[in-house]
Length: 70
Figure 1 (cartoon, rainbow, N blue to C red):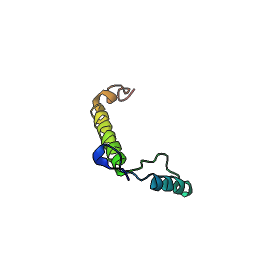
Figure 2 (cartoon, rainbow, N blue to C red; figure 1 turned 90 degrees about the vertical axis):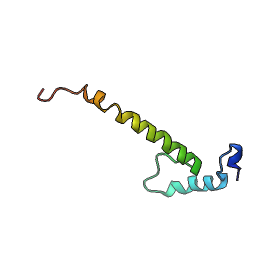
Figure 3 (tube, rainbow, N blue to C red; figure 1 turned 135 degrees about the vertical axis):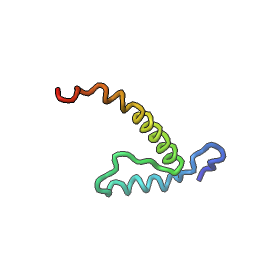
Figure 4 (spheres, one colour; figure 1 turned 30 degrees about the vertical axis):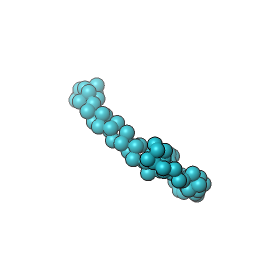
């Protein structure tokens, strides 16, 4: 286990490898895996920001639709 205070991820490589191997038997198999709580928190933060950015483009996206009735 690495010390996150030193900027290193706290993930356990042996546990990560075990979860990857176990995923082979998962139905449906995961398309993507985020391993480690620090990695998950970071990934969710990025995705939330990306969704927020897309939501802000709602009017722009709608402005490119065909007008109603055409």
